[in-house]
Length: 344
Image (cartoon, rainbow, N blue to C red; front, side, top):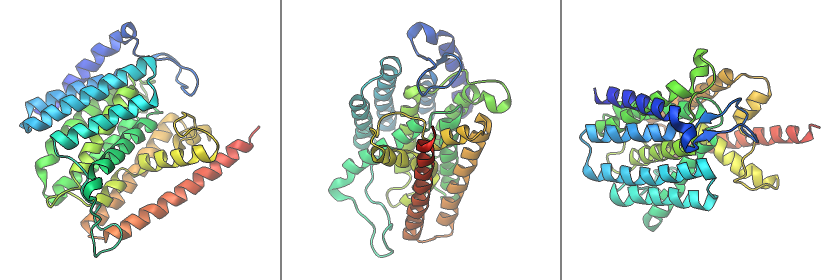
């Protein structure tokens, strides 16, 4: 019942915000790399935050989890609204993300302590004194991967739903149900935003609400929290390497873009139209087709990771396989970049 209330409450908040977004300046105006046809409200993140907070207070979570989420979420939402309206500098955004991650590491005790047996079967890679630094690095990476994927109706939300669904399956498969309520709350809030953001897939026209930087920062943060929490400790839900697979497509895209931009003489933080979904659109695929291809690919990659987890495939084998697959993806994207550069 609480999960249904989160979904309905998020819908109501989003509808109210959508009607008033223009008055507070939270609108995405077409232009530059933004190719949508009309101004669209950037209020998805605020709605998701409202739904998440409701769920945290309806269900019996530990008080430190509630407070950590409220504090970290507020930091990201305020920063995101600032960015959506005034375009905050990258340094400000990264500082806010690092601070939010520091909050969950300190208050909710959610941090990376080891990377599992990713190098061999003999020794787990313990992080020791590097734990907090690498927690911030990894979580900020997840946050920005979701932010970069938010370039197509329903894409960021859809990919996030794939990751959350994989986490839910992993929890039940491993018999570790303590994380199920938090994952379920996030899924409920994401489904609500998809009702407004993925209308095109149902033939209802373009998105009526965007996540905005507010939403992509918040959703990425929630995924980072869940991926870290479920892969650490003796009672972990899954191996750390499995987290790479259930989040593989956004991670592939983000890391490949950040590597390719400097190679081509551009800032790694300069927005462009060289994400895989842009290439699919440029090759003639529709928005719906691109979304379906993306979601299907993410499901396949997550399925490989979960299957390996269940069948106890050695972690280092899955890690090296992941690196090889990413190398192939990177080479393909570099080839596509080269072809685009040659066009008149």
